[in-house]
Image (cartoon, rainbow, N blue to C red; front, side, top):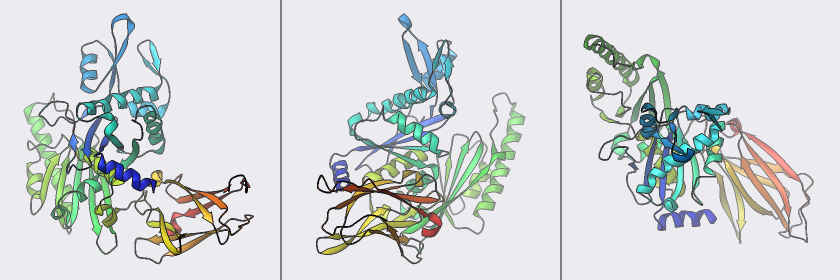
Length: 444
């Protein structure tokens, strides 16, 4: 009931969702309203597609010793001008946990990361009101639980009241971005090449349209041999030779990945892609495929993902992305509502294990057993898991209130914690707590 009200409020007030791509080298911010078809991405230069914000802070000491923190390109320029001290690799510093010396001062690395996130999010204020932000979805190249916890703690001091915080992997963002495009672009497989300083990472998405909902899978591969060296000091001949080599390598990679497959669309992500060098690669990729180039797909995909959480569309019920980090089954329970029995959904297939956190209360009427319905989306047989609450006396008069909490500490199992909450002063809680583990192998 409360979820329905939150969704209704989000829709009526045309709230905003934010996609925040947070990386060690650079970050991006995209935003989208509830009724907006395509997210917008904040550019550092008006009228240009300068979306990357260096993930850097610069400590600048002003008059009377006042410290001013700058971010992004302002931070880089201020440090280059000798007017401040640059701090980079903020994610690594936060994970390390050791104090960071900046000039004569030492700072908590979590505080530095919090400062960067706060100042980066403030860039949105030129376009939307902070109070209108209903959700912020963070996406990172590697979804490390300890880093996600650091960001959650930082956001407790930053986020506007009632703003939801979500996390989506790059694969999740790719999936969300694609299914929100015209369907003719993803009738068959879709290929993404993300070109970073570490080389090219490929994402190949394919769909199993025989399942309901349609199950989507993404295969990834890393090609370190495509690393782009610094060409600033290369002469024209050496640069031309490097470009020819990279072009040949990319053609070979593309042929290997596309042969015997029906690839509908190809996305080239990153500033390293240039017509200056990938001429033969583009000729090959454009044969019977639509090719798109840009560098803000992940932050836009995070926006779509956040909006689907806050305001689910028919896409959420029709398509589900599955990976090793996701549930492969719907988990729910049958409950009495008046004179009829209804199905109450608890966890949905496609949910990231690190997002599983569900709590609610139920009243026991008939016996001391909780029955969970587990429905794999691969079409295999639905089964029922019975959890017996040993030692609990069920009175049968709707005075046995228990609290259920579902959570996961790793991708392998769902944990259920059950507490006897009693029924007011008449029937106080016994204090009993039961824990049950459902291995994922048993529900996939």
